[in-house]
Image (cartoon, rainbow, N blue to C red; front, side, top):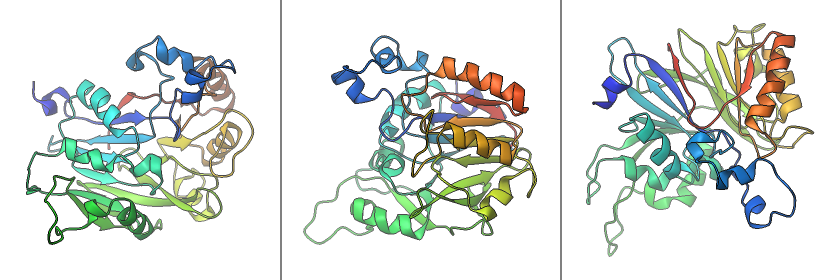
Length: 314
């Protein structure tokens, strides 16, 4: 069956990864299991596609299907676990390609899979293929040019062999809520947030029929950004996808669950899904707590999980 027939005539969000930078299971829990952990050992006994506590680096695939019925596949972030996500979830949901890439920032868990983009591009030993558009800030571009100079350079240096590498069309976007851009026919509004007080990361607002905000790495919302996504500001979100690193306490560069839930109450979306979790979170147990919180506060909130697919009208 053709992939686009399999995916039907509706858009969908596919959560390729919902874990922190080190992913879950935490390697130390498996190689030095001196401190008991109820979550990580499940990885040794339960297949990842049946284990919602198996979490790769945060990444979202938008299967965008406008009224003409033609699907486009837009990838947000390409982290260290990208190849594993392709093998597990592209095959599960019959995703045939990537049409556009959008980066939130240039940290390892968002970009270190860029080399593997070639694995989902048409094969050409001479790199004679159409490059995949990739949208990012100027700061991220400069950092990636150092990390992956061979993906940025367009010409092979004299005396160097031609090697097959991912072909990318680098497109610079602005770090503000006023300047939108379009990727594969879908409009995105950058949402600058603080990822630590010395670093600006981007989330994204997208969707016309359903307003969705995706914010994977945040410690604080600037007032101008929070206004754009708040019910009391520019309008209520249909879905907020939001960072939460630890169950308790606080962290200098991420929201933890107490701050995440406070942010959800301020922003007041119709629904929220949480991502970026460490091994402190047990999917089923903590979603029971969140169900009780949701009933009390009037905002449905749950932990997302890798492989979650949500049909949605964009």
